[in-house]
Image (cartoon, rainbow, N blue to C red; front, side, top):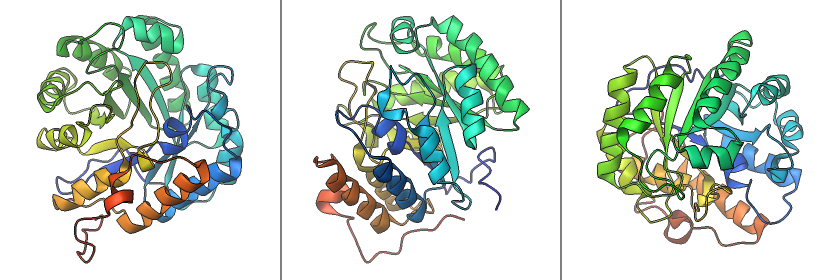
Length: 317
């Protein structure tokens, strides 16, 4: 069965979500997570209607030991219909490994902050952009889309505020490599809605319409849903989120709290936008994960549930 075409434009009344929980959510868990739990997590997300799932990453197991079994997770989740199974890579070696594992999209990251780039991937921003050229070449040879996150787009734990023009400079350089999409990442949860509007405008002015823009938000300071709403107003229709609110970058101090997928879906449905996701099924997945990991997750939907359970939510068209 053919995969979801992540390169296609999205209608104004719909959004496309990628759940990054199996990768971004689990990578910093301070305990072993079984492959059975990871596979069940991916399968549950697919059953709930997620069209894009970041299944794992092909990076150094020394740096991110929780992702060392990503190849096995990909093998165990083959044949999941039209869901796009996506893999994080940071260099050419990882890109080849992800292609061999059957990834449908290569996801990568370049930091706008020089300091964070060196701490995260051991390269300067300029070097990371050059490495993206190699990743894009591997993807092109395999006819796969490339999705690049611009980390620290709204601030850095080491350098402080980041100017929108600096984000636009990096985005412009990356857009020239031909990725399908660029996601502006609020790595430390520092953005306010006005920041989202400013950065989106600055990047869009430089990249034009040839590259899709999206948002990867963290709820560290409780503004992720407000920032998502600002993104909607700015025309963003692609979002990353993590089931249960799992995750946060292990290389940036205090960078907890990916925006929770079910909370974001609830917002989108309340605004009359279609997602193709069954919210109750997604909440059930979050509940199962909470039990499997034996920790309380920050999901509001797990605590309170949808505002109107008898309301028929819009479906993905």
